[in-house]
Image 1 (cartoon, rainbow, N blue to C red):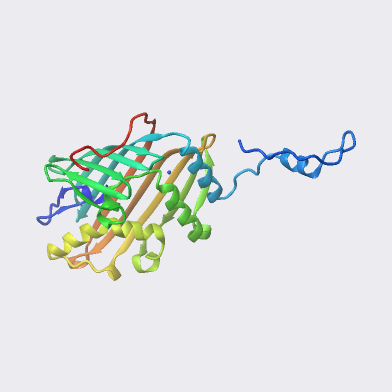
Image 2 (image 1 turned 180 degrees about the vertical axis):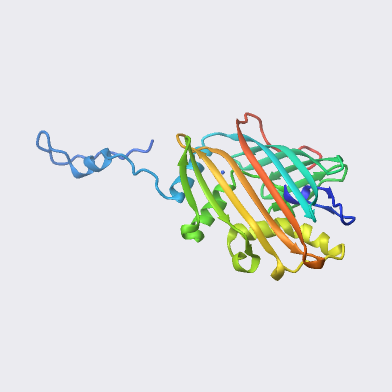
Length: 290
C-alpha cells in the first residue's frame, strides 16, 4: 500500500506515496499381557506444545492453508509533518488471498488530504503483480519489484516475514499470549537509521519510504540515509490462540528527515489488516489483463 498514497504537502508542491498417514503393521513377537511396546508408548504421548515464535508460525501456516481463500480488510494512513503542520492521506481496501494456488486480488481507494480519491486494483498471479491506478492502463512487474512490494498488502505473507525475523532477531522478537491471542512483535525505539538498518523489518520500512524520499529530493530537500532517524517502528502479527489462524497484522513506523534551521520533516505510516473470514470465490486475472 505504502507508496500509493497521495498527499498534498503544506510546505512544498509535493504529492507523495503512502500463506491420515498410517504405518502398516508388521507381525512380531507377542507381547505379554499388559505390556506396552516403546513405540506404542511414544505414539500415545501428546505432541509437544508450541513454545517458540517459529512453532506458532508453523501452526499459523498450516491453519491458513486449511481454507481455499481468505478475505482481509486494509486500512492505512501516511503523513508528512513540518512545524506542526501535517499533510496526510488514507487508504482502504479489500484483499482476497487464495492459498492453493497462491493468488491475490485487491481493490482499494486512496484519499488525499484535499479529499481527492483514486481507485487502485491489484492482481498477483504466478509471481507477477498487475497494477491499475485510476484511469492509467494496467502495468505488470515481478512481485520482487520494490514498487509492487510496497503496493501489495498480503497478511498471509507476513508469516514468512516473521519467520525470517525470528531466525535473525534472537531476543528482539517478543511472544505474548493474551486475550485468546498469540502476538508476535518486533519493534525499535528512536534510533539513528545507521544503527538498525540491517534488521529485516527496518529494511522493509526503508523500502516503503524510498519513493517519498525520492520525491523530497526532487523538490530540493536533501534526504541522506546516513542522516535519517527512525522515530520508531512496531510490527505485530496476531494469531487466534485456539485455531492459530491470522487475526490481524499491523506495521507502523516513522522517519525524521533533517530540514533547514535544525528542524525535521516527520514521515509516518500505519497500515492495519484484519481477517474477515474465508472467501469462496476464485481469484484469476480478468480477460483484459491476461
